[in-house]
Length: 131
Image 1 (cartoon, one colour):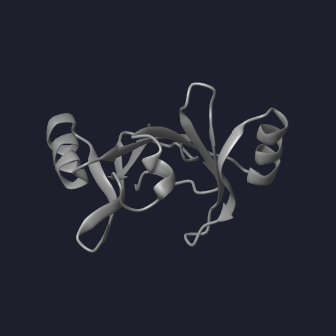
Image 2 (cartoon, one colour):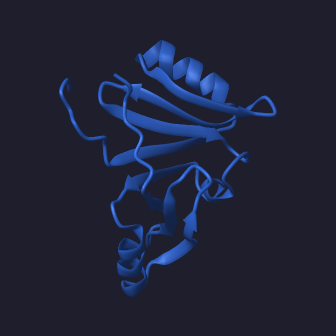
């Protein structure tokens, strides 16, 4: 939506055995656009694809953040105060699978598994579609 002055809050996270092939398919078949693709040693470790004002994050299964090898799908949620959010989750008995961590890309994050096994990550990283 034009004129949107804030970044999205929710970001689906997907892991693929072949992230390059997934990016090619998603852009060709569904019209996604590459926003960012980070490659290490020839392997996609993190990518962000946009569609309208939405962003999906993806990477190669088994490469990069081991947290996301717990499940091939998840949700990342941008929060303003990850410390308070983490404290609330702990008080509610959440299964914390990654403690509060200051990431090298500037985000402060943690992750938890919900009662059905889905992994949710919360942090200050807030990608926005490029204008």
